[in-house]
Length: 389
Length: 86
Image (tube, rainbow over the protein chains, first blue to last red):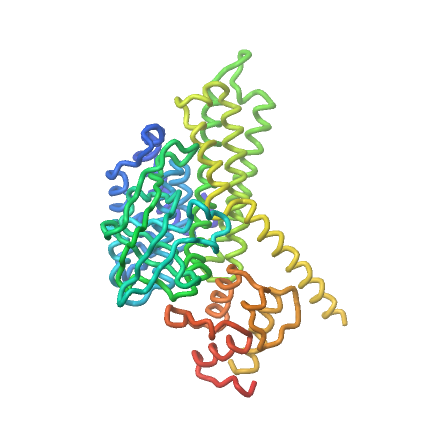
């Protein structure tokens, strides 16, 4: 029983959990080895309505509230971080259009994204530009009624599978966001393999060579592509990653609980050994704390509260660290078994490390969070002085 | 909601973000380098939540958000009151 969830949310969560147990957990390690997510699984996710979870019902989506969406990310993250990244980047394109698309853009693209006829991906990072995202080198030039886009994007999750990418490029030095369809002349992708984690996330290099898109593929306005359009997408991405990390940490915990209940050493199950209990106790506690931060972010997101930006950043930072610690301890508990691909915990550990890097590295989150802390400290101090005067 | 209370609300939000600094209502917040891209999204959420208005694609104009006075003017236009005298 979870007193924080409504009956509808509980039912939704149970459905997500059953789906992941049946269709994701049994194949996640194999997909990791193959470095691919088969289209059938993507189609199944679409059919379940998961891809369009955040899309309003009027556009054919699920119209999920923020907490229900978080629960979906948690369960999928428990099964496969690679599959979570599909929900993340597809959702980022949906979110950008929901918030900043024109009526015509929403009418045209959201129903296609909701059904999975279009798979979205978010193309911001470049070979020379990671954390310093405002310094992107890709350009867009107005040519009559079209835009010509030139540049290269790297580490694009589901870039191999996506057929509708939200590309951030600069127009005369000002950032702008564009929808680019696969099949557009000058657009091509190349798979990236050999990654530490997210091996089934279909990463790709994206090449934009004189890629021409119609004028109405501009999302938002020129000058607002990074701060507002990418900003909305990235905030949503951090929300997905935070909840996904919670799921990953839970997966590591549940694997450890199962393993230590069965495995015997020194004539007793591992769970009877106190140093194992220490590791498990810390996992349980940290998963609980991570859940609290994720729920806080969900409540703020649902309310549209400005604090959601910072609290989501805090949740992403904390949960990704919890995911790494829990996965690392799970491998430790599993011993040599945990280092083999017979158990999922090694995949959890590799994927967890990626979580500390994506959607704003944890160092970037720390800078933002600390700065916010000093702001709040000074403001509260001065406000208190004001009250006492 | 009237112009004076809108101005007070916006001023407090910006001041809070800038550690309670006193901010000239005409100061260009983005050109000043005092705010970052996260502030831009927080500002949108603030305007939407506290004034109950939707900020949409067509509102993405630098002139609507560049200063406290500009934000108040934008809110005033959305809610149908003048802010020039406030």
